[in-house]
Length: 397
Image 1: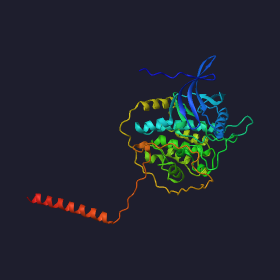
Image 2 (image 1 turned 90 degrees about the vertical axis):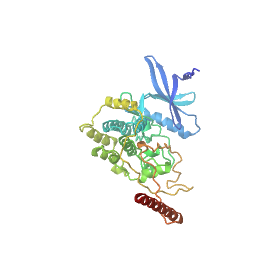
Image 3 (image 1 turned 180 degrees about the vertical axis):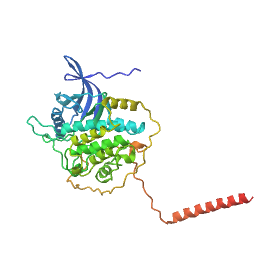
């Protein structure tokens, strides 16, 4: 029986086609906008019906911020407004793979992403963040933009090899109308900076996320994901952070240094700006064997996705370091409100291969001279003695 393709939807002047993404408060479709010079393909983001004023405020804030962001490494915004009572944002439709898809696929096939590709992508990402962090309004007043959700799922590698940072829906700026409740954290647990879990936030939180992303590219491992949201947050706060070269010995010391400085828990010891981090990355790119252009990046991406799942790449085995745990109660947290009220959590991948990054912390059994253990030992000794006697008899015969 023939499948019937759904007819396109007419939304104002846009012709809406298939869904390409959905979040907690908005849905994104591929759409087309007929113009005098031809048809423009866009990603049409529409706010889901909601009675929560906070969602509307977040969406409108995103629309306001995006008009200030005009950079080749940030998906462009063409239009925003409201049609039939629904708010929308029309953005550049980027054809390509997300960084999340790349890391997950490489973990199952080729292993870690090459250092030259990692350096190129990290430099482009820092370029995008430097632009966002330093934007000013029409009067020259700094906007103070912090993305707050820099993660592999929000980074697309376009078909030309150009990186595109997307989804400023959780971005924070000085002139936003949305006020985050005390103790409520916006973002994904595995990429949130430790100081943010204590209620402090500035542009350096985005650089922490860049460090995690670089670690994942270089090792094919997730860094902080735990069994649940609380354990993940405790790892972000306390777990000893391994250098990428411990999992992938091919990682250069200079690249180790870039990642580990981005992952300093004290923001004052972290890279002071995205520009400073980018400049250091470019210095490493200038070293022999590390220079690759966007054409080389997309050639690698295409090649990687042509590879089929086979024997998992062998990396240095690693075990997550233990961390202390806190007892949860039903009362308010140290921040004055429940920590997990509004926190998006992404389930960690399976730990059966290298991508799992960190296998669950093994349970270590403590030996005790219990009655059951004594009986087990006696039985094992008797069996061993019997086998020894049988062997001796056979030899004698």
